[in-house]
Length: 301
Image 1 (tube, one colour):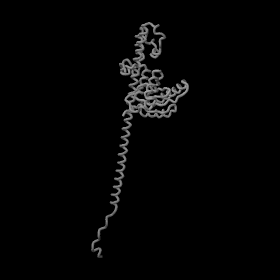
Image 2 (image 1 turned 30 degrees about the vertical axis):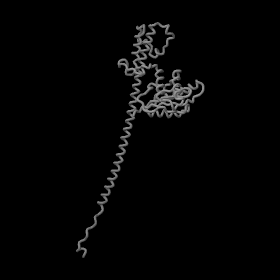
Image 3 (image 1 turned 90 degrees about the vertical axis):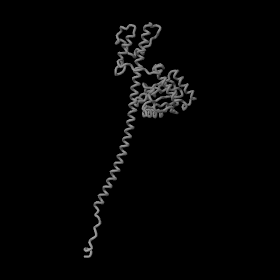
Image 4 (image 1 turned 135 degrees about the vertical axis):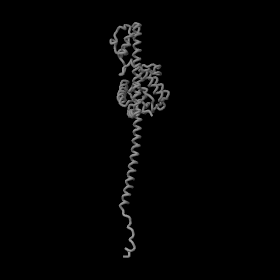
């Protein structure tokens, strides 16, 4: 059985006060979750509205159970209700020790819609729907179109990425080739994050060639990001597989130790029985047989 577990729960939100205080409390929850979850290999997502929390936890079974036990003791919510719990084939939040989603009006609307469908009864929420909602919102946060969700991007050819990960020089070179003034050296192109963060103040004010080059550069960066995301997913899958193999090996080792102890006990009992039998034989050998009757002549004398 897979050691990868998923747990989906909902609870009543007890956070009250001004929005700033509520958000500060949520940030504290997230910081603690991200720190603790990394230590036990747990990933997931959290969202809340004025009435409820919804959260997904996934990872090794022991890590998920320990995390959930700690969550249940948190006094900032109540009526913790498990909606789904059991083995999972793969993670839905590979890159997130704990993602915070649902801040947008779109996310809040989806959560409120699920809550209304259940009659605002936590026990009637559907675990699969809550998971799908949180997973979809996280993918939107990452900017992944629905088409890419249905078909994960394939890893690029080995020559486009070094063994250590993203080949930044290669990405810069590809971006430099897309610029209108392609004579610029690749080394002069800003690092990838700077290109991603840049936002033109007015698209209409930019030349068409520049806009096209920017869109092409963003496309290159998006492909590189998708490649790194897939690499992270593959590595996480390898870790999960190793953890499952380790758990299975520990189970086999425990069974072998049990069998060893059983046979050792039987051997001790057999040795004791043999020792007792040998002692009985020695006692019998040391006891003289009854003396034979004396001849009649001797008796008569």
